Amino acid sequence: MSYNLEEALVRREAILKGHFELASGKHSSIYFQLARLLSYPEEANSAGNAIAELFRSENVESVIGPAIGGIVLSFVVAQALNLPSYFAEHRGKNFILRRGFKFHKGERVLVVEDVLTTGGSAMDVVELVKKNDAVPVGIGALVNRGNFHSDQIVSHALFEITAPMYEPGRCPLCLDKKPLEKPGSSPRKKK
Ligand SMILES: [Zn+2]
Image 1 (cartoon, helix red, strand yellow):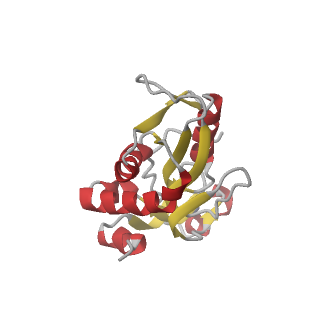
Image 2 (tube, rainbow, N blue to C red):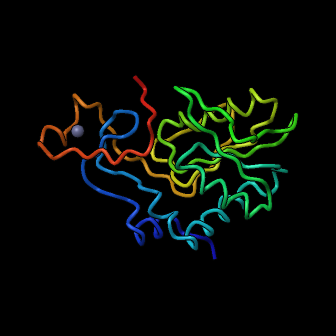
């Protein structure tokens, strides 16, 4: 039986409805708080297995995700594939490898991310992998909420939803004076 992430998100209250400011600065009526899902080991393992299955034939050699949201996810996907798990950390606007993490030349690396919106963080990690002479083989995500797609790399998400997003100045929820929440999980800012 395949894992139904949408049901799990509802079950673990990881999909929130209201008025939110996203990491990009845009506003939306939907927010994914994946830490709530991943805090349950059986959910994290099930989701990790499901992502691992999507890339099992890709001869992946290691898995990496952007900290903080990608740390647990990388671990459970790597566990399912019996591979090492790494995470990338922010230094200023860039991601770097720390803690002695390194790839061998040509290592086939799967990049994972909890939520793809613009895909900015995931693509930054893809670039980090390339910069370290390794080969990014794909992006595996729990949720794709922004129709993320790249011509450079294959990506799969367990749950795809076109969640409305608004520029702050043109947000109907702001016009309705709904209180704005900033659940935030990332220090990353576009501007
Ligand atoms: Zn708004």
